[in-house]
Amino acid sequence: LKLAGVPQGIRSPSRPANLAGCGAWASMAPGLEEAAVAWSRSLNLFSGAAAVLGEGAGVLPLILISASIWLAVQFSMVPLLRLVAPSYVQAVERVASEKAKESNRETPEVAVKSAMNDIGVRSCAFIFSTILSYGALVLTLNPPPEFVKDPDFGSTAYATFYCALAAGYFVWDLPITVIFGYGGGFLMHAIGCLSVEVIGLHPFAQDVVTFAHLFELSTPFLNARLLMIASGHTNSVFFKFCEAGFALVFFCVRILYGFAKSFAFARRVVVDLLSGDTQVVARKGAAFVPIAVLAVVLCVALCGLNAFWFSKIIKMATGKKGSKHKKVE
Image (cartoon, rainbow, N blue to C red):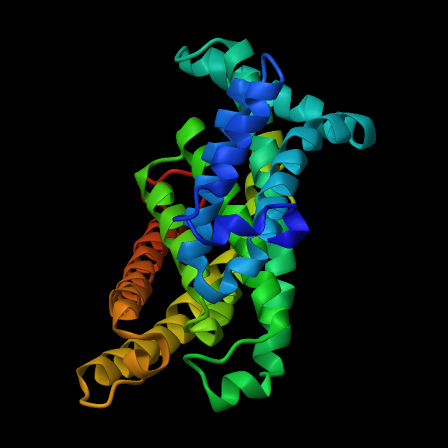
């Protein structure tokens, strides 16, 4: 928290000294009372976030920096593409305008604006999934001794960094999902994934959370495919490769490997909680039991969500009606 320039007092919400100081400071300078109130609320927000993160509260600045970076990438991507790939942007605008005229559900101007917003979001998703997949592969292929020795409570700086990076991404993703109307399923996904990252930072089940980052291996194929659909480039060999790669990696990583790893974790935690000598209570205290239960629920729920998405992939592959323009499938 010192890295973010946040006073030490925020670690203890019961200490009002900082808030009182803000008020006294504002009274000395006319017109700054509102700024003092805003700062006071920020202190409360940081206090709450720090309490939720537990031992991982030290990475809160990194989470906020990560969220800010994804927001900056989102808004800078289209202007950047206009400079380096103007033909691609023009193709996206043309396709969006033509579809709007065919459907008569929105004006071409609105359709083009929506398409440009979508390009920014998908570009963030593509970059994020590539970075996170790299980190997950490194940790999976070369498991740190902390995870081997203590899979449920072990933690490493490398894994913590990627959990914080992912937490910041989903802090950005949550409002984006709502604002651009990507649907309830993707809102649940964002909430669930953010909760998983926070639990991993606590730290708890950081080994499993890091493994879950492998799920992003299929996402670059998905977003590359959707970016090509947006510009009308759907007849190339690369487009077919992305379609096949997405389905294959999704099935192998999220369904085959993912289900086995996820249910092994869920079983291990449930057995521990039902035992007379539970390590969760011994290591984290009785107050942490609901969080451990939540971790199991989220693990099973995300498996269910992946199964639902895979059913949609099958429908699309077999030619049945399905959406091709959702944020994630």
